[in-house]
Image (tube, rainbow, N blue to C red):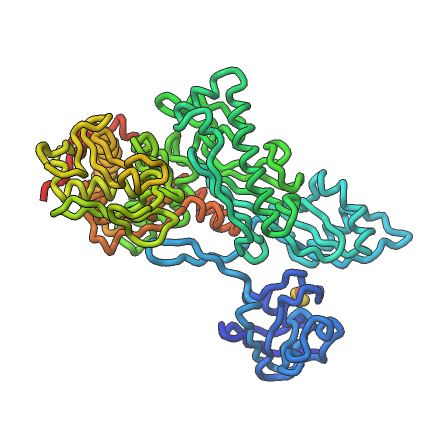
Length: 621
Ligand code: FES
């Protein structure tokens, strides 16, 4: 019955013949046609809805009557797993029945990828054991997975000890209907009945900030997000001070406990907001800089503090969750992305995965500014990376009135070249403010200070060397501030603290050193790549998202590039970690990126110091 009938899938146009008794789902799977089937074809999930357009089909089944609405039954909607062709036929697969796609941000565009993670759910309806059978519960489960899901091509399928402990109870409680989560050929969880929930978490662990995403592994949807300050900051602001602290007695344990506690608190918050338990999260993928990842995994960091900055491991790790202290499902795993080098970590690998150079787009420079600056240049065929010591100025740290990009931070500044009066925007407030407005400003963040320095230069308050021009008679420019010359952006009665928010000569210097490190690093990468200009610049990181590209060029922070070819992409490292969680192919690509990238050590690069010194001043136009 039905054997040999030709089925044409729409809208793809893919066609093939149904072999003896095959359902429409069987044919779609054999032809590689994308069709969702979360319950594996058991008529339970209702994901495999199709709309036959021509030809006749087998009669409607009991499962279809239970899962389809009267309106769907009336318009001919069927379940692909319950429908067999009874003639040559054409079948339309609606959008909601297609396997989900997700996107990673890519300079000005989105790059789609299939949601196909390392872990899948297999729903099984198994036969109850007969009196003369000697198959174990695990053997019965594995047979069901192999025959129902065709997972024989994977590494030898097994069942982890953790899953084995629950298998017998789950099989009997579910009446021999269970949902097994399979990861890299191993069953890691067995739940009674149809239990479709399967979640994972992705983290971008930065020196200063941690970003988290809770994702549904079956749809790719982000169920919750969270961000937190990295509590290791209490032991030092930068990676070198963390390395020093780790060498003290119990120092490494304290640092590890701090970040593990932070991740667990974020997992708890995200799980609560998504209405699931942290135990429902079966995998966590982490992208962090090399020191952050080593500290999280309890690896030694001393060698990362001195040349040649050798990591204990560069490849990604996959470790049972209980060994890491992470409070996810105890049979789950913590996975780290691969690092490129001592100072070019997995966060940069993840950023390159999400927003890195692609073939056919010319030469792209990716700039990821966090507590450290990471750079990459490539054209989709070659990739060169470097790390540069920008210092914390771009994160608003160690400035006279600096603060993180948080509510109350001055994020944008314009200075009238005639009056030298400032207008500014404050995070969390609407619109631009001028002198006299009660703005509640608390300080200035990285994008605000870059704007301020650029506008001070354009308005003639600073000279090309970065020094304050002497003799300006204006209340906004003071030469006798507590730290020497300063420019007043917000007056005390406008601010939340009741103190002026100023940019001092020391702040200008910090910005100059940071931008010189970035520009000199970019110039070295361009020289190594054999180009004198780039076609695109991708700015990653929170700072990159808010910075005004024109002002950044005006102070000589970025190499020349048309302004409409500069793309801020936000937290690309977080996007990359999420993509690696949701797609095995993206995880593999991360491995290829880390392996293929060539690392240039700027501190040893001939002529780097000369380039750095030359880049400290501002471009003269
Ligand atoms: S695959 Fe689940 S109902 Fe058809």
